[in-house]
Length: 182
Ligand SMILES: Cc1cc2nc3c(=O)[nH]c(=O)nc-3n(C[C@H](O)[C@H](O)[C@H](O)COP(=O)(O)O)c2cc1C
Image: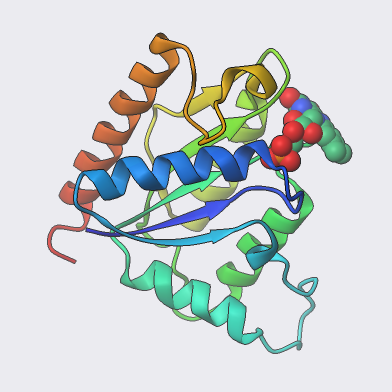
């Protein structure tokens, strides 16, 4: 399958970008083709009506339109979606065709906090449902990620890594059913 991964923060040391790298490796190891948009690659101009989308916004739109699914790896800011990622989402939702319509999504988050970014993912679910995307009910959350992610972004606890495998398999199954052979 052709799959997109997007997310991370604008910090060079982003835990979420690190987790995104690990998930990309997991998907590539299963034979899938990955296009990643992480960290500063999602630093778009603030959305403004009448402003033309930049080539980088259009490149993301085209990659999503060509993909069978997307993995979103998002930090949680104040129990919500960080501004640069919400801005990217809003840009994409204004384009025709919107790449979100019917798009299978796997949500993932890493946080130094106790909830692993789970509250931010609820905000993602509301936005994705509004745009017609189809988010897998299961998600990947990594609490205390400053200690529980290794240098390559792999969760160090066996149970967390098993949860990653289960969510990835569920996502691939959802994408194959919703976008067979796309
Ligand atoms: C403005 C701001 C708000 C934050 N709010 C939350 C929050 O609600 N929940 C949480 O778990 N962490 C919160 N954090 C901490 C982030 O989870 C932490 O900075 C994390 O490392 C960000 O992801 P990154 O490592 O990919 O940059 C917040 C950080 C910032 C800068």
